[in-house]
Image 1 (spheres, one colour):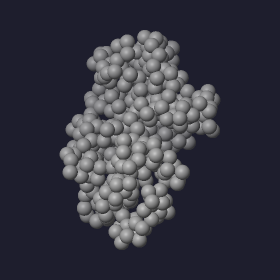
Image 2 (image 1 turned 135 degrees about the vertical axis):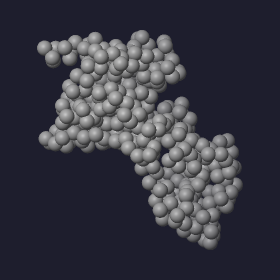
Image 3 (image 1 turned 90 degrees about the vertical axis):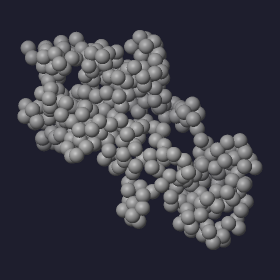
Length: 389
């Protein structure tokens, strides 16, 4: 690893965040804020965030939960209990930011909605993540990553052309929504720190997932046709997909004409540069099925390693088709220091993928291990008691 994690003052140092979230989108957004230095208290029901039960379990502790809840404290509160509800309200009013991912109306019914709390704390930044948004004909519906991928079109463009609809293997709806939430919160913090008021941020997972599909929606707006499934291929570039070698698969991305000519040089087929089917990027994309057959007739004569070395030397963007074991073993991962040891509450040490970002060449430290359920409830109760004294 070329540089250590930073111990300097972080951008969100001094910002207090309270999280009423479960599973992925909300916890991820709050963890991004925590990585940047915010002090995050995760409020959980007595049974805990349901993600705590997801395997793999190490000493009874979910590694999935650990991956989204570092740098946080946990308070277990029963919001049906008046005393715990009062404590939750005090905690919110002592915070700068609230993040919640309940169905619309749940927090308001508890007396913890934006309207009530902002009247007491005008600077409060209140971020609500939900399936379809806080208003509108579908606002009362729940949703998970799978159903949002289905509704937003992601599954219609994922998979092979002649195959069934498939979801993206990474929960893109959850995590893109979490990113939108963290970005919006950080933006509002600038406004509040400048003396402005807080706001209620509405993060609809449906809209966020459509938002990151800008190339697909603009294709529809441009020609009136919904994009379809192309496997690993690209609708406007070729060769730009996975190809089969003699012992496996690899990917190349010849995203411009110069790179296309470099590909032809590597495979020894310079005559294709004059083929009417492949003269321009548009032509190659239109006839990419035929192009794939021609190129794979060459690629299948040599193993993946041969083509990786050849395209690396030619300057053509390329990659092995890694599984996660291979991806995490990439020397760039080690250089950047992205995989870090982290201790679980029972004392077991595991590993996690830390923040991939750097500031001035340094990464972000894991300041707190992921918490046990309710580990900090009494500590937070005591802190609020001292402030109220």
